[in-house]
Amino acid sequence: MRLNKEQQEMLAGNNGRGSQKAMEIIIQLAEAQGAQELVKISYAHLMPPDVMFYPYGRQGVWANEMTNELTMDVERLKVPATIEPKFCQLGVAKTLQYPDNIIEEIRVIQGKATDFYEKVGVIPTYSALPFYVRPGKLGEHVSIAESISILWYNTMFGSRCERDDGVTSLSAAITGYCPLAGAHLQENRYGEVVIKLGKELDFAKFEDSDWDAFSLASSRLCKEKRPVFLGVPKNIGITELKHLLAVIAVESGLAIMHIEGVTPEAPTLEVAMGGKKPQAEYTIGKREILEAYELANTATGKDVDFVLMGCPHLTMKEIRDVAEVVDGKKINSKVKMVVVTTRMLYEQAKDMGYVDIITKSGAEITYDMCIAFAGTQVTGTIATNSIKADFFYAGFSAEGKRKVRFGSTKDCARAALTGQWEGRVI
Image 1 (cartoon, rainbow, N blue to C red):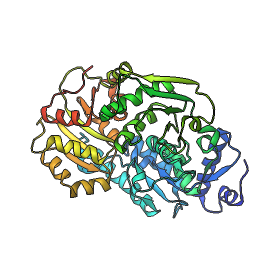
Image 2: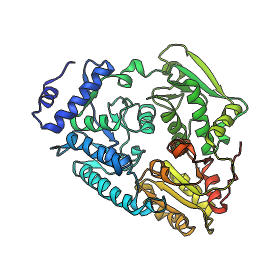
Image 3: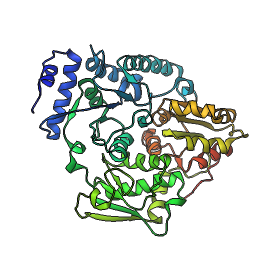
Image 4: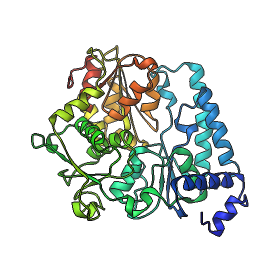
């Protein structure tokens, strides 16, 4: 490893034990990745375990122990940083079936952690979609610890980052450096395979959940090969992009993909491929889309107990969709509905009257939290508009017993009103 003077001083402990520990972590990661040197970053998005991952019980103790040494004597981060959602907003914890003693544990551990990160200069975005506040720049090096944001910054902005974890991104923010490896290097950014939609399907007719299904089907075909998507509308919206990127981000280990004519490093297929021919070409047809829906729908009956949406946080279009469905109506007395967005969009939705409409229906709308993690403790059948959340709910269920319904935002909102699933049934 070639270290400059600043890096050597941090490693020697001249800047305190926290910076030293962070630099040790970055160097160990660099050695594991085969990097010869570190690269200066201009921004980091953090996923601290004491904020996001089950801040109670043994997980809470572990998170505290791990972060305490790393953050000791750190007064300010080296770069601007945003932060992932909190585990749970205390106001909806009861609805999500957390007992009082656990709620108190969450309050103490999560509260102490958020106070610290804000004190050292972290922008309190509390969202997996930090680009609303801090967009990326073409060619800049950053450290991101969130699956969809890793793809978003690399793909949509042309920023350069690897699939960093929570400890890595925090260490990078403390030191200002990360390993020069992976997607930080141009040779690891070119497309490898091509994916297009079957002729019997039309992107223009997709519902939001169809983008999830398309993403899942694509991921299962391309696996770890960097895809270039062809034929995606050049005016694709932020809601559709969110659903496309979110699933492939967690289903694969990809740091970057390309959309021909949409993303900055893919003005043409030839440019996206770096002048090379695709290793494979895949077509996603109706059969593959239906198979994705079948994988995501693990429930067999029609009864729905919970409607949980906001992983990643709902866009304004999705908030509006929910409000339009429930406007002037009441959700079923047997159903609990919690929808989550960013704090910024919540305030805008409040001004537009959507928050009032949703609240009057008997549902709860909140912000700053991760409904995917927080929702894993409920009992009963969950309806969601996110395959990413769907897999969390089913995967973290005791003995795999929790059943999930997956469909569009409007399908889920209608299920909250009736208590019955009437969406796409495979």
